[in-house]
Each structure stands twice: as C-alpha cells, then as structure tokens.
Image 1 (cartoon, rainbow, N blue to C red):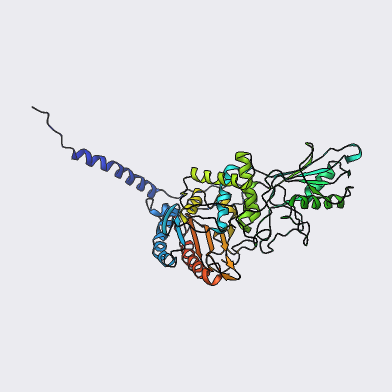
Image 2: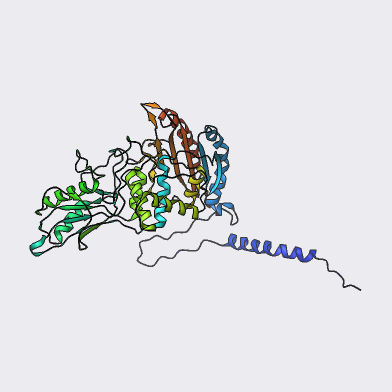
Length: 483
C-alpha cells in the first residue's frame, strides 16, 4: 500500500506567513520606537535637539526616492517625446535614453554626417588608452658648457602638446578661448633656471613625434589653418608667431617664439629659428601639460580641432609607435569594437569631425555615451548650456530650458558652395542631462541643406530643450524623500 500523501497546503500557508509575520513585527517595532533623547555634554554650546518623527511608513516607495523620481516622471517624458521625434525627417536621427534604457528614437542606424561630435569618440578612447594621469612633455635639449654657454644649437623638442601657448594667445576663435593651457613661458624660465646664459647656435624645433601630415587630405582648402591645422608634434599658439604673424612651418614658428622668450630673459642667442631633429639627448629643461582630463575638457568645451587631431595621432603613437592619423583612427575603431559599439554605418577619417567624409549613426554615438556617463571625465568635460566660453553658451542661454544643466558636444558643417547651400550640412548635439536619479543620454543628428542655419535647427533644439527641461525640473529624489 503506497504511503499516505500529506496535504501540502498547511505547509505552504505557514511558509507564506513567515515573511509576512516578520515584516509585521519589524513595522510594529519601528512604529513603537520613540525619538531618543539627545544628551549634550556639559559646557557644550550645542542645544539639545529632538529629531522629528518621520511620517513615511517603513515600507513606502518613498524610502527609495531616486528610483521613484525617475519612474514617476518617465511616463510623462515618453508621452511628450513623439512631438520631437515627429520633427525628424528621413535625413536625420534622434535617440533618447534614461539611465541606459532607450525610450525614444528614429533612424538610429542611419549613417550621417556627425561633424564635431566625432570628438566624443576621440575623448572617450583617449581616456581609456592614455589614462587620466597622462601628460604631454615638451623638452629642451642641448649641451651646456662653461659659464652657461650652449655649444651649437638649442633643441625645442615637441611632445605633442596641443595647448602649448604663449600668454598672449587667445585662440583662433575669441568666443571660445583655450583654457587649461601649457604656458611656454614656464619652459623658457626653466631653461634660464638651469643656468643657460648664451647659445652659440639657434633654436631648432623638433616635431618628429608625429608625421608631417599637417592637414587631413579630405579637408577642403577653406578649412585648412582657419578651422584646423597644421597638425604637428611641436605646435605653439596653433602655429602663430604673434597676433599678426602665422608660421609657414609649425616647428620653425615654435622655435622663433621660443627664441624671443629666451632673449627677453637675457639669454644671448642668434635670431631666427629652424625646424629639424634634435642632435642632443641631454635634457636641459622640460614643461608638462595638465593631466589628460583637463586637456579633454578644453577640447570638448571649445571644440578645439587641433587638440582632437593631435590626440588622435598620440593614440597611434601609444599603440603602434607611429604618430599618424591613420594609426590613431585604427586605435579608435578597435576600441569602439571592443566596447560593443555598433560599427555598421560608421566611417571615420579624422579626429575633429571637420571632414565631410565622416559618418556616424545615432546608435553608435549612444553606445559611446552609455559606455561612459555624465559623471566621468568626458561627461564633466563637455560644454554646459548657457556657460560662457563654450559652444553651448548661446544655444541654452540663461533663463532658457536646460540652461546650466545640459552637458553636450555640438557639431556644425555648413557645406556651402559660393554662399548657397550645396551638399547636405550638419547640426549635431550629443551628451547628457544629469538627473537626481541618474542621467538622460541623448543624440540628435540633423543633416540636410542649410540645416546649420539657426532658422532651420533652432526650432528642433528648442522643442528638445522644452521637453527635456520639463523632465529635468520634475520632482526630484529629494522632493520625494521620506518625511
């Protein structure tokens, strides 16, 4: 006779009641607790304070306010975003995500002109490959003899520093002056401090750290020098010898700038300057840049094209020993693939985004943003809406939605021919909106004839700012915290 089967339901009921009774006991204990008296030592000036009693139940969702804040406001955001998505035609794309979860998008995989949002990729890869402690080092080589006399030439050896500058240099665009720069005057001071009093020869600028491709072959003539380049292993003041004189050769121009600084400090040295490789391995003095995150902040905030291109070549040097644009691009592409970034539709030909041949997708840019965050060095280095000195100063000005909140990289390509819209231009925006409960990641790539004109892109940007501004200003975690 088979054994008698036991009824399982009493056991299941008991099993279910155990956690319920436990939670009930916890609630009763918590409810019965009275505020403890705060004892203050004699002689203390602090008053005795009795903490207020929280009225929020122990098991209320308000005990997790950050999660509640995001969840409570996300539904309203999702409901509002179709207004924005409907403005995006088949030549553009948009992607919006909250804490890594995409909640709206259109044409995510469309291959488009990204313009300067390419710099986001370069910055993110540089941070991983070079590391946050990386610094650029510019050196002076030579043989110092008796009485501080350098026999022969003095060599200014470039270390690839993209922001090596004189104190008078305010950048090619006065609206976005460079910052976090490396002052070349410090290097001249260090040479004098090392005891150099005279140089029998002249200053020779050594730019051999990188190759001699000063301009990307896909840049049009109107971009060269005006918008980007020359790109060199030794670059001072973006190849300006003074406010009115541009150098034909960046290494020679740097040598002339340094010669003038030494003469100002009383060093006897021949006028002029030339370009060439260092013939001495003896380091007399050196100057280091700020750590990489500060250099990246300068590049991202001001959209510094030369900095982006020089970082690209430094990536090639770091990984392959060759400081070239192509080697740097190989590093960027390989790193993105390692991160799982979707590469279909992605074509990169430079580091600045100046070339019309670059192509990205909203999906690829979104993946890069989500690999990082608004709190990392790249996110914190982005331009801030309404803040002077950055590319978002006017787009999200004070008093407008997202002013002082949004952090993003802009991109602009006009692609005009004889002043008339020719092939499609680009107006792009990608970055973060910080939230009390996390962040919004977004990509907006607009392509089309004359899209870079304010009359064409600003209505879309304004709608974006209004919708996301309402979301960012909705009840925060602190508003929903236990009472």
